[in-house]
Length: 186
Length: 216
Image (cartoon, rainbow over all chains, first blue to last red; front, top):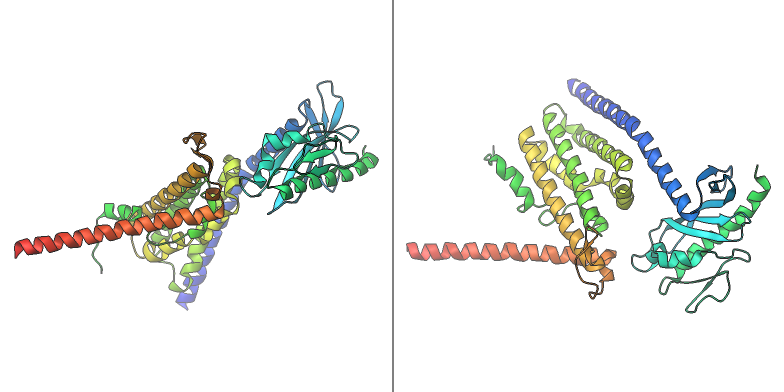
């Protein structure tokens, strides 16, 4: 009987102390973690909309859309966060698009687990710059092994066609969904 | 009662004699997975050492009141508490690092080095010895991860800790930062560690033979 009591007491006390310690650490860490998340997002937004000075989150259930304003408080377009399947896992990216929803301003990769050295090249400027001023209507196309000849074409990375195509697919998907946004806005 | 070793030895043995990576071959999963760069290896080593030290000290200090039947449950509870603390602190203070190490920080809970040292050492020895044992084992693990990470980063990206060491003419070995490179590097390091141990053993045996023949 004494043994049973000891077992119960030891486990209860250990669990109680552990719970208390964890909740205090969590209370301290939670606002900081939230702050980091917001900082990371606002940094990314101003990277893809370089003229932006302020942004506002829009009410759009399917993905995170931010309307970006310039120094005169004029809306200059949107920053869109979207994700989808890459070669090995999820690719999460953010891209800026103009007010008419037909021109990409810039693109940033937020999260990816593509093959290092091949698919991971999608995070390099060399690839990201290929999206600048790209036309999204009609949808972006991937071309292989040759320079793009239209303003809606992106050249795939050699040896990482799947990752390149994945990025384009995610951007296209988001751009399509975004067109619905025009209806619900304000 | 076995002979009590001196205190310094309790620390020192973790560095080489029972090094978690090279001698006990424990905790291979994080070892292989996170060591794509020196900084990742260092961070993983530090996080594991922190958890190892605190859980060893606490487990050792309550070893007399924890009933045998629930000891593992209690150990896991203590270990996971510290792991969660590390995870939260890293997310709050070092978001970049936390992102790079991903799920491997929470997985320290099931790192067999920690439970292994708790069961094999901390539950049988006093607090001071357990602290030194944990510090030694943690440092040994950290050094092993740092070595692996540095080698892989150097050959895979020409740099260590992000500073370029090899010239541009050196073409990078992509395989080193892929999972295969982890196995290759670990295998070669393990092989060299064993070769060195064997060589030392043979040498000391030879010395004994020589002294014996002289004495004769």
